[in-house]
Amino acid sequence: MHLRWERELAAATWLFLAARDAKAARHEWATYGVALLHCGILFSAVRMSAGLVHAAVGTDDREEVANFLDVALGGPVIHDTGGRQFYALTPASTFRYWRTVGTECLGTDAFLGVPATDLTQPVPRCSAYWAVPMDGPASLCLPGSVARLVGIGRDALDRMEDDGRP
Image (cartoon, rainbow, N blue to C red; front, side):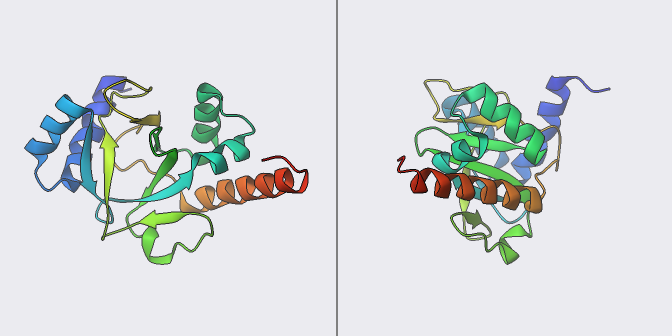
């Protein structure tokens, strides 16, 4: 059994492998709460709008959304409150075949602002936090689970549009 801080440390060490400079990334986490990491090497990131995710969950309550995403996706999810986006971290190869409408999968041509592993709720210094924290190195969302969540969200948005709700 590993303690939460041990899992965070192991996840951070793994994530730093996607940084151009691990020392600089550590400094960025300490200073800004977020570091730019290269996608498509260790992980890809599926970008979903907050509206889509909230429609899938049926609420925008932060804790309920986090619990739902944890159960539905079983892997790490970053919430960027400033950009109103969620990013599900998936295996690195996902970007090669991802074609799910209404989303984008960030691969080798992209960098993602990844919050420090201990940022698990919004803080003033950083607009991104882990809605679902990493459970350890390479613990990622299954692409099929992310695609199902997107489908649920799109169906919910379509129903809301048919009902005349914004």
